Amino acid sequence: MCITASCRILNWNGSEMQPADFKELQEAIANAKSLEVLGNGTKRGMARPVKAEGKLDLSRLNAITSYEPEELVFSALAGTPRQQAEAALAQASQMFAFEPPDLSALLGTQSTGTLGGMIATNLSGPRRLKAGAVRDHVLGFEAVSGRGEIFKAGGRVVKNVTGYDLPKLMTGSWGTLAVLHEVTLKVLPRPESEMTLVVHGLAPQDAAQAMSAAMGSAAEVSGAAYLPQTRDTFIRIEGITPSLFARRVMLETVLKHFGPLSLLAESISRAQWIAIRDAVVLNAGSHEAIWRVSVAPMDGHRMLDAVQSARGFMDWAGGLVWLALPDRGDAGAGQVQAAVKVLGGHALLIRAAQNIREKVDCMTPEPAPLAALNARVKSAFDPQNILNPGRMR
Image 1 (cartoon, rainbow, N blue to C red):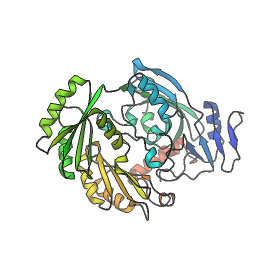
Image 2 (cartoon, rainbow, N blue to C red; image 1 turned 45 degrees about the vertical axis):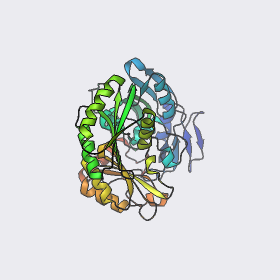
Image 3 (cartoon, rainbow, N blue to C red; image 1 turned 90 degrees about the vertical axis):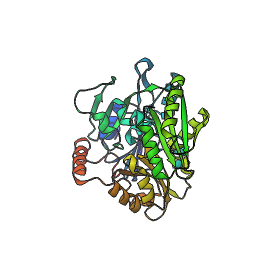
């Protein structure tokens, strides 16, 4: 049990612990049998439900510990709300360049979540195709493993060449290897302005070709998405205003033979990309399950064709497909995973009823060699399976 007065414990059967510092976090993990690790709990409805005796609530680990805008380096405790971090960055006209999605509308939560949850799930938005994923921006962290051992990795510099790249290993591990205490991320200046060209009237396969052509140009595209409902293809460029006009002309030359073009006003462009980032363009009803599928960019339209009972759209120039299916039976898991098996890639069940999430493959099963490797990694960090048991299976 936790031995410090500030760590609140509510009876051990179904207990809840709220550590207030690094030492209390270590004590909580060292004395636990199994724990569900939570920041604000905004992503509890994603993937498999955790089956644990206790809850580890990180909401008191909430502080920006260091921010050096001139160095493009930002550090905070893992329980710090993302909204708080992004507000601090906005004051210096900076941002998390990977454009993390706000899934609160889909998941029915009041918060965008915490920095720890952002790193644990490794979910990136439309700018990923230019700026990279969350894992490409994590410089370092300090954490407690499932063994109850404190460890640190990385640092406060952009280039770190010592030892294993543990920041990348922890990013996307869904809290199953260690519990983050403090994280350090690289941040970048916010673009001065943006433009979005829209190609109208394309079929999915033609839209894939148009997005590929845009990505292959020198226009430095930062977003490429396609909405089958309206047959519109959106191509975004960002940066300083004078450069946008030259790049716009370049894109128009590349895209004009695909179909009629239009240009979104900047305010409409920003709103459109937020809707794409957060998947609200699906307009998914409460009785629909939501899948997020990563594939090769030229296979995005094939994924839409393969799951014909779904409504969906493509982001990342076709490399990310969002699908909405009826939230009953297996929530489309059979169709989605079968398509992934043929096309390659990875599927994640973002939203479905709990009884469905308990029985279907919410994440694409790993090939046997990779599963064996991940099992060895899990054993090294959390041999007793204390942290978020069942979350990724």
